[in-house]
Image 1 (cartoon, rainbow, N blue to C red):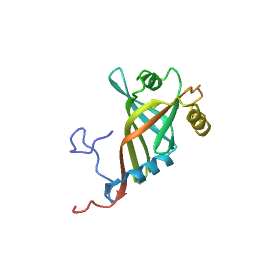
Image 2: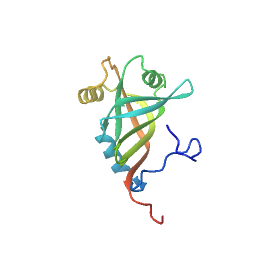
Image 3: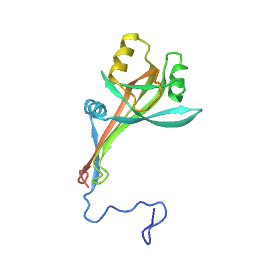
Image 4: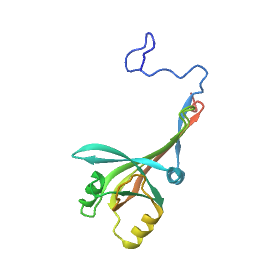
Length: 161
C-alpha cells in the first residue's frame, strides 16, 4: 500500500474527499441472528495446536443454531469429535459489506461447536445444507451461539461527535 506524503508508516489513508463518515451501530441479538441466517457463507474460527485457524464455509441457521458440514480430515471435524461431547469453543463470522460504499453489517457468534449425532437432525441438516466444496462431508457440526455480536456500518457521524 502506498503511503501519502508525510504519513507515518502503518497509518491508514483518510477517507476519500466527500466520502460520508461511517459509524458502527450495535445490532440486537435477534436481528443479528436473522442477518447471519441470510448470509450464504461465513468464516469459522477455531484452534489448531493452540493457534487460531480460520476457514470459509457455508452454513445454515436452524432455531438460532449455526450448522455446518465438514469432512473427516478437516481440523474442525477432528477437534469437535475429540471433545468428549463437551464441544470446542469457536467463533463464527458472516457479513455483507459493500466494497464501494463500505456500508453493511457484520455478525460474530461465539459458542461451543459439537458434532450432531441424532439421526433425525442429521438427516434434516444434510437435506437442507449442500456443501460448497467437492468433498465428502460426513460430519455435521452445530454451534450454539452463547455470545452474539453484530454491527451495522452506516453513513453518518456518531451521536455527540
